[in-house]
Length: 318
Ligand SMILES: Nc1ncnc2c1ncn2[C@@H]1O[C@H](COP(=O)(O)OP(=O)(O)OP(=O)(O)O)[C@@H](O)[C@H]1O
Ligand SMILES: O=P(O)(O)OC[C@H]1O[C@](O)(CO)[C@@H](O)[C@@H]1O
Image (tube, rainbow, N blue to C red; front, top):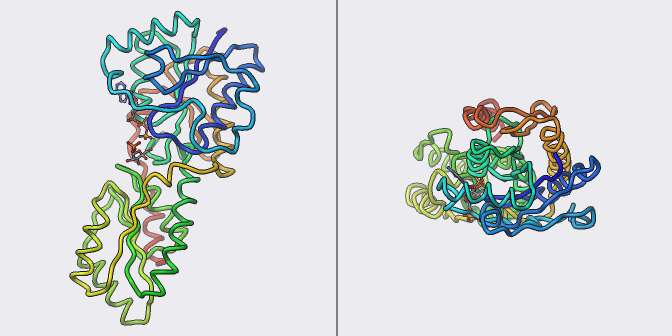
């Protein structure tokens, strides 16, 4: 392997930069040239590609976003477009590709590997929705951002004696809601993996109020439904003033926390080792603090690993 390409795709995630840095510096340390592909698959099909050196990735370890930019590229779902991408890789002399992104990006990587490209996927998404790995790069930073907001909202919820509903990201995965809810002591955690009963939530709000509770925090994963609608329903039923806060893209930004920087470093380095050792159509991940690589098809088929124990613990502790 003489030259490796790296791209970031899908939603950006804090920690993508440390991962890119690790990919570049590990490859260079082994005598492999690195090409940075800008704007995900969109940049790949347009030949938006430039060589990366050690200094290209200096002073980025602490930065949110991705220096390579990212994009969503619907055309990549067409086989003729992917064939064009294969030709571009050949033109640039790239014989291995590291794709940093979420499950959609991995689908693209898998289909590229079916066309003979040596690919390795690196999990970069705040959602933590890739079941084959314990954590994805960006998840812990997003949880910290939510926690910071939750702490502040708790103050005003308490002063006004209101119900505060905080909507967080995670289309099909409740991990951001679950982790931030536990860490922030939310009264209710509503996630796509579990049904919830509005009547029971309202009953506990009224009981809490009667027993002198001044605040009431409900954390809601976006995949379940709208926070504003829920606030109105709760206010109508309980008579307690309810307000919604939708955190949105604030969760995708900011300096990566220690965990995401170290995860990016370890997974980035392992992705290069995987390619050098001739394993392709792989993804890298972490389980029980051990970095590993596995077949991309198996990884994409891994069943959701929602943490039921943590969810039950949240109910006891609230
Ligand atoms: N089925 C598919 N076939 C080929 N390419 C795909 C497929 N699904 C997604 N992609 C490519 O991957 C890109 C990123 O996918 P997507 O928008 O689903 O984000 P993601 O990687 O899942 O990240 P996030 O979890 O942050 O949203 C798409 O814009 C498209 O270019
Ligand atoms: O606004 P965008 O970039 O389309 O992405 C929003 C989506 O991306 C994610 O943040 C993942 O990065 C999802 O939780 C969210 O639904």
